[in-house]
Image: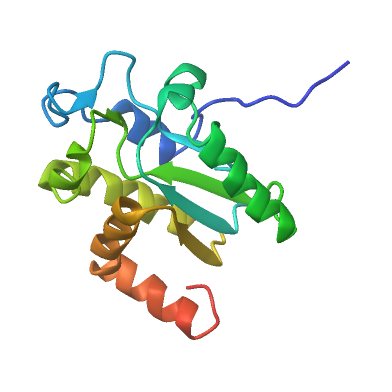
Length: 167
């Protein structure tokens, strides 16, 4: 029996993004749990995602599963999307690739190297997917979105959505 499976990051721009991820030189060991590696996304990267959900940082469940938002917060987010009739056409990414120690995330949300890499993900997703809505989960995610929205790509997409069309 043939089964559907995740082929991994097999195409651009995602293949390059996962190859060039920032490590502990960008994510300080005192503030982030980098020992298990980065957690990139969850959901569709095949050109069918209509909703982009931005979370904060991967928790223990996510670090083990290697996908974001698989724990309690993820179940709630998927429950919300399910009630809206969206059960497959979404993509989740986080503000940070690594789990944050304690409440130290706020001091790194606007670190230049973290922001640059995160914006590359946001830019790739909105260029490659027919995103119709962006949802942020938490203050750090909202800040991350706000920083991207202030960029030329973010501003262009925000204006297009406000006018009821996808760029």
